[in-house]
Each structure stands twice: as C-alpha cells, then as structure tokens.
Image 1 (cartoon, rainbow, N blue to C red):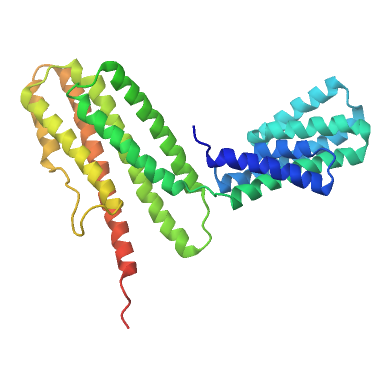
Image 2: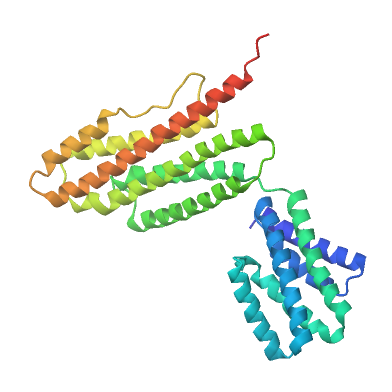
Length: 348
C-alpha cells in the first residue's frame, strides 16, 4: 500500500490548521482541522473553487445561524430546521459540495450562541483558517501533475486494450479472465477521463503558454477518443461476431485488420514519447482494407439480412477506430512539427 500525495497533504493540512489555530489562540482549533479536511481537492483549480464556494456558503450559513438564534433561539428542533433550510439554499446556489462543511458551521455557531457572540465568531474564524491552510498546502506541497499521470494511464490503457482486441476474435482468453480484464479496462477509461478533466481545468496565465496548452489538449483528447473507439470495437465484436457464421476470408481479414490497428495505435504512442527513429512513421493500415471488409459481407450473407447488419456494425466500429487513429496521427504530426520549428535557430 502506498501513500498518495493527496493523503499526505490532507495530514499536513490538518496539522497546519491545528498549529495555526493554537498559535492565534482560537478557542476551537479542532474545527479548523475539520475544515481543512473538506477543502483538500485533487487539483489546485478545484481547491481554489472549493475555497471560494466554501467561503460564500459558510459566511451565508453563519449569518443564517446567528439570525435564527437571535430571532427564535437554538433548541435542537430549530437547529435541525435551520440545517434543512441551509441544505435547500446550497442546492439552490448549486454549491452542493459545500453542504457538509456549511452544516458544521451552522451547528457550531448555533450551539455557541449560548456562550456569547465572541465564541461564535471564533468558530467561524476557525473554519476559515482551516480552508486557507488546506489551500496553501495544496499549492505549496507536491502540486498535482495531471499531465504525467494522464500519459502514463494512456500507455497502460492502450496496452490492455491491445491485448483484449487481439484476443476478442480468436477467443483465446478464458471467459472469466476476459470479463475481468474488460471490466478493469472500462474502469481505467473512466479514470483516464477524470485525469483529462483535471488537466483541462488547470489554469495557465501567459498567453503563449495558454495557446500551446490548448493545442496539447486537442492531442490528448484525440488519445482519449481513440481508446474509447477501441473499446467500442471490443463491444461490437463481442456482441455480434459470434452471433453469425462468417467465411474464412472475412475472419482472416478482420483478424488481420484488428492486429494492424493495434500495432498502429502502439506506434503512435511510441512516436509521441520520442521512442521512434527520426523520420520513421507509424504503420497505418491500407485504406482499402475496410472497403474489402464491406465487400466480403455481401458474399457471406446474401440472404441473411440480420447477419449482414451485425457484420456491418463490426465493420463500422473498425472503420471508426481506424479513422480516430488516423486523426490522432495527424494531430501528433502537427504538434511535433510545430515543436521542431520552434527549436530551429532563427536566421538574422
């Protein structure tokens, strides 16, 4: 078991919130630690947005709590009713993620009103201290590097995708092994989509860097889409290939086409990682292969319209996967050529 950066930063943020709370003389530094736990996020941008939303919701919740105590008191039933109202208000403001900490604010302030206004303000200050401490830790200590995580995950997903694609037609894997691998691949694709969203959320302030990053995001989106189309091909083959009887020529061609696409996808990632020799290009499949697949469908299913429809679904999935790989190849080539041009010495 490994300790991730977010786990470590949560512990540091709690310790920092407690230390600052004791240093400035807060009456309830433990509340600052609770606030720090709720504020830690997987990206700096999300952490900043969380702070803004938490400040807005908690200040509003504090005002509601103080007003409620002043008008009607702080009996247990009233505290519960105020909490219900605050939840509805947070949903109305579309700040659902702040509900938990806002309720903590409401409860501790309403409970503290019996001890005086200064105690209530002290607890609000403790909550704000915890949020600021968590944000400072998230920025200063091991800031998230979503780009590296995304690329590493892309390589892992492509390797698993290639393994499943190469065996889905030949049916070499045991059924339980294939299902387990397919389930894991689906989960990794979802996680990869989350990594992409985290990377896309990061903010770049310089104009040149911002433009460069936008172009990079287009390439990364192409990587993600290509993997998703590859997974769609697995599902198409699994759902339709074994439901019809096909000729040996079509079987050999579809198997060869999938093998070629897997190799093409793998070489594209090699090219992006700089592992291929200068001037070498990824081996794209010949365009006529997909056309030949369509022609052979008619020869195998002259009278069976249902079988023809199933094979057309598989052929369409093959073509879509191939088209996304060719598109990704073009995007990579444009990016790498632009980087090469920027590195050339400028003539006087």
